Image (cartoon, rainbow, N blue to C red; front, side, top):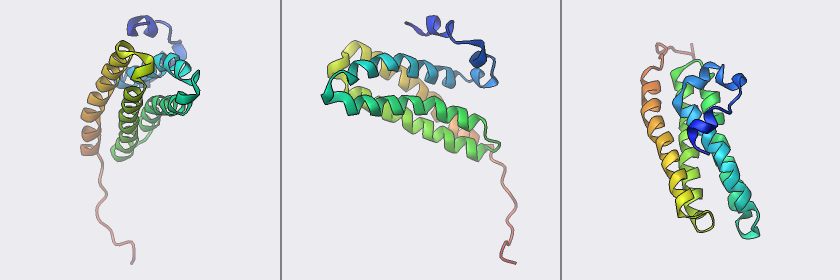
Length: 143
């Protein structure tokens, strides 16, 4: 399934949310969905069972952290959650590399490309959010 086909299957309860406007979130949901097939294949071999669990957690964490960050009110809080998503995307890429012998080079190349797109977007978003942080005036809270 390619991205365009997948996007047509997403229900309005998700696409109707303003979070859906974030391309990085849509890509993260797609990565999690197509990753399910990869995780299932990896879980069938006891030697890669733990790898499949780690990959599943890392992939799911990308969109979950993006959603959590989107709900935060300050740029600093948003940036923190989106940094977690960035870490999960990099972790997912690492797990895919380790799974290349089972999943095949073509599948892994596609997943690595998708995750690299997510990482690139987040590397632009996070610094912008940090720059938009509202800073409180220094105060003496010990007085």
